[in-house]
Length: 278
Ligand SMILES: C[S@@+](CC[C@H](N)C(=O)[O-])C[C@H]1O[C@@H](n2cnc3c(N)ncnc32)[C@H](O)[C@@H]1O
Image (cartoon, rainbow, N blue to C red; front, side):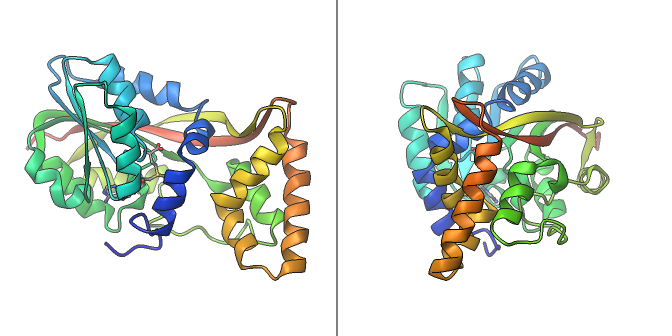
């Protein structure tokens, strides 16, 4: 799979090294997604797939909440899958597979529920991908996923972009990318044309946790130097410019520090859809 996001390579490896801090960044979003998953799971749910499971947080939480259901996390990154397997080794109903969901979905038919925390906006061809998921789904299957809302509402992105010399008003890519599913009309069209009947998405405004602990500002700066839009700007800058970027990033994180935590305003959509009648 060729995308701007190299999940099987460097980006997947950084996410694997940083899985605790990426999980933590979603601390205030995850309970909303997990509640939507449990509210949507069909009564006789037997098979759930977590799309782009990363280090397995959603797979694990779902498997714990639904112990008689089989939950399989699927991700492109071998390093993330290794971490997920290790985290869930005591959870007998959770398993993991390193694969492209758009390739292996048919071998998992029939799926009762697909879930995903921020994994689906990286599909190269989202309409084809969701159509493949629908074909592999049981007749009454559902889909629940989260994705970021517009970048302007995600100040962890805009402020770190500006701090590191970028243009936070530049157009965001439609697909694939963290803001590819920001526009609900675009996502609604994709779902409708690929065999899914979606409800209006739930908007969640939440605090994106970038840093924690006794030196939460340094923790947040370290995190943004590894993950997100500031990381590549800092990496690619000449030494003097790099120092200026880091100084400005530190100021921005300090402004969002609440002592023990550094949190930025953020917004996401939670989508729920049912497989359309054939
Ligand atoms: C932003 S990360 C989210 C990871 C995890 N769901 C979480 O919440 O921590 C997106 C994940 O989707 C995975 N991914 C993207 N496209 C995929 C595909 N076609 N099949 C399987 N995994 C995919 C990536 O490898 C990456 O781990």
